[in-house]
Image (tube, rainbow, N blue to C red; front, top):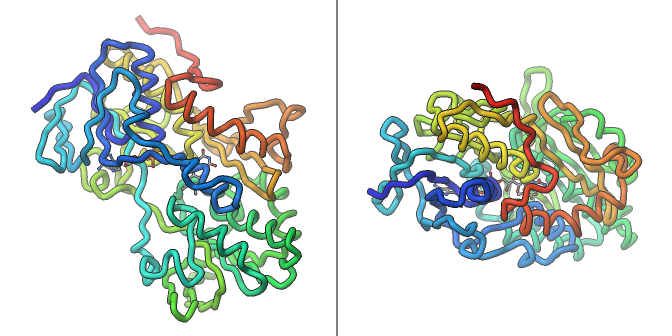
Length: 411
Ligand code: FAD
């Protein structure tokens, strides 16, 4: 068994940013990042791949090139946790022991949760921006369509980037409008939830686009089955405590899959009842094991599951981890910040930024960038600024605009 100061589970947005933020503060620590993936993806870019703005390879890097200097990469999957012994077991039979554990495994896209979906993904007009290999197919379909019915689906919450299903829809409609074919299209948004977006402030701006594009909003519609050959989708429609099965034929369908905690987390002693890593929503410390921290999409914190949230959380986790290792109380608190750049048309974005309880947390004063309105400056931020902020800032421990403010040190 090898012994380490810090073991980080997951080398995604949250795991790598945390490793970088820890090592920036204390270079001498022995930090291991455990992740089986050879590739790391900038998933926020997939919306722009599906919208024909980015090429898929722009969103992909080799994991080995991103592991922060001073950290070691263990290319394996974590299979189970023994928090009482301070050990994790890997799928290759190895065990690692730690002083502090960081759990950042992302979430599970449950494609199999929809009957018939996996068999037809990538063909028969069925696509999803939620997968690297499928996002280009979204743009292919959008370009080839001249008329017909396009369905866009959204499963029950929580999902990562809750705006992504409708971002795909708006960019598709915009492309059809520009080509003069939108008038021949029937566009439907089937949402398992009952609102267009969870924070009301942004809804009026989004509704303007729903009306402009002539989108039919179908709330409380949960996709349960896809027959790819017949091009028919089945939705469970719940109204007044009654659920009916509705069939809709389609020419194109963009699916956002249902999402859950990863199985190896849900079945572990670290999980809460819903399966997520059970942490305090402010300190990111585990509610039972004080040498365990959790952040990113896999954590129980009730924020919008976004890379923007992970960017804010990582330095906070780093501060509180080092505090804990020094035998001191947490000094950094997470306010629930997350961000969702809603691509309402090519060149314009409604930039939703909010924290716990839907509190608005804009990064800029409204005279610079008003997030409640569609702006080209927010598009510039998303297309031009955010990718380098991710690759060169967040993953390297440069905490641009997310440096945590620290509570006074208790004696
Ligand atoms: P991930 O980045 O998914 O990383 C999880 C890592 O854990 C992976 O590398 C995985 O291999 C590893 N792992 C899994 N199981 C194990 C195991 N057993 N052992 C070890 N390692 C394991 N966010 C935004 O901020 N803005 C956006 O505009 C935006 N748009 C999005 C659009 C789409 C289509 C999608 C799919 C996502 C979008 N997001 C957006 C969300 C954002 O990408 C995620 O919130 C972010 O990547 C979460 O980081 P994470 O580290 O928690 O998970």
